[in-house]
Length: 247
Image: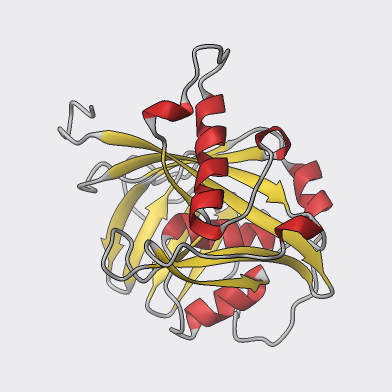
């Protein structure tokens, strides 16, 4: 229980199923039924951690999250993933103002040929697609699909790679995304640990940036030292037909 805000924090797990293709990396995305939580959104396979996902012999807490990710991939998309082969790359917490807060651990699975056939459950999930991160971001920018912030940031990260093996090689433990958010004239800005405005919520404060700009003019990830020195300093034009990989 989040005592400060009297909101129950629920455990959840998400798995990004990725494969190599001629255009780089493709990921599996699922469309949520419009009548449920996150309805109509395009997401990665995932859901709540059940009590049965924890086993008495577990030696760490993250194992139950891995089991949940594997179970949800099977239930939602009909694909079987080995928990031993998924890589933990991020942990997301929504802002305290949210009525429902899911503490969600994200994992990456390198899809084998056996995972190419997807069968959605037809209940919680109504559609699926294999797409490059770039294509998904372009469709979101065009208003064709909707995604939540963790999905957007993950897609924006993955678009920079040419092969799934390159992504896995770059992962050095899970990155924390514990969100603080503020409204601005053109939309919302989400701040993360390391951003100068993480506590003040002042987007104009001078200093380091590590934030997701979710504006009417476009969404983009911003990360630099405040003087333009850093990996991601400018908005990305997702309307461009192609983009060379940064990796």
